[in-house]
Structures are given as structure tokens and as C-alpha cells.
Length: 90
Image 1 (cartoon, one colour):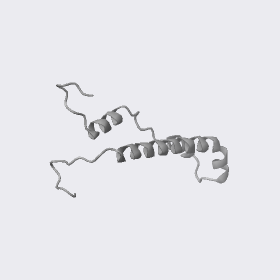
Image 2 (spheres, one colour; image 1 turned 135 degrees about the vertical axis):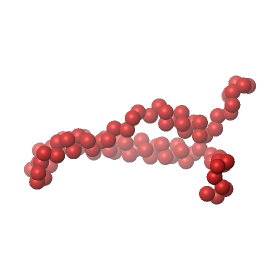
Image 3 (cartoon, one colour; image 1 turned 180 degrees about the horizontal axis):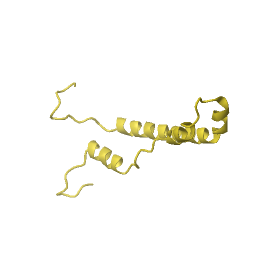
Image 4 (tube, helix red, strand yellow; image 1 turned 30 degrees about the vertical axis):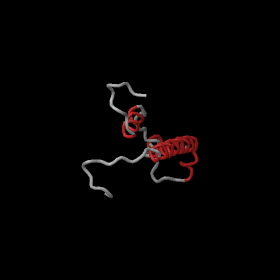
């Protein structure tokens, strides 16, 4: 419950608060590019040699995908509010 002098918090406030505490995006494919950039032409042997990095990055991408999906589901539960600068139905 809000204090008497405190404005009522909206769904947008909740979204902004949730986004503010998220860690900075860390591109999960950077390690792959780092190990494979010197491999020209890219051979199956080079891919097999770096399979541990590829598997670790795959796990990171999967975790980030799940986190994004959780955020999407959370955002879909926020009730819509009209914005004064946009026409209805926009």
C-alpha cells in the first residue's frame, strides 16, 4: 500500500523498476567469435576442437532466451494504460 502523499504506482512503474535491476546484456556469442575468428577456412576439425566453448555458449544463449521469455510473460500481465500522446487503438 502506498503512503498518503505517495503517487500510486502503475504497471509501467513496475516494469521500469524490474528493468533497472537487470544486469547489462552480455552477448553470449562473443567467446565463439573470439576462438573461431582465426580459423580460416572454418573446418569441421576447428569446430570439434572448440566444441566445449560452443556447448557453453549454447547453454548461455538458452538461459538468456528463458530470461527474455520470463520478462515477456511478466510484461503481458501488466494491465494496459492509455497513453495521452497516442491515439486510442494505435
